[in-house]
Amino acid sequence: MNILVKDNLHMAEAGSYFRGSVMIEGDFLVPPRTYFWRDLVVTGKLFLCPESHVAGNVTCNGAVVCHDSVIEGELNAGTEQLTVCDNAKVRVIRSDGNVLLRPGVISAEVRGVNILVMGKIQCGKLMGKNTRVVTN
Image (cartoon, rainbow, N blue to C red; front, side):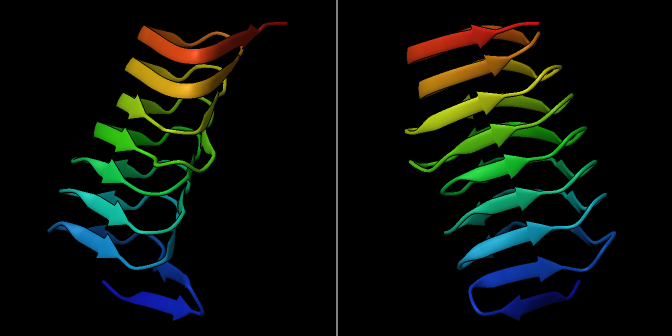
């Protein structure tokens, strides 16, 4: 599949799928309904648009995981802000920075420095130095 590059931002074509592991030097904008069969490594920020699917692990430095996206492996987000939006499913979330979890997020484990939970989520372990839960 083609990846378009503009300055430091890499963009995949809409509806792309990648059979092997992918490594991107810089920021990566993943369009909706994109499928990765293996690992995804991004040296910059990751913008995973709605209904995208990663079958392996994800490593990046800050990310926005949009609604209804699925990461079957671990999400290691580095030190930058990590936002996981509504109804996203991530097996394990790890971050050395701030983590924002929106309603409906499903994860077996979340680790971060500052964790802010907005609404109801399903999480096995929630571990952070500062953890706040905001409900309606």
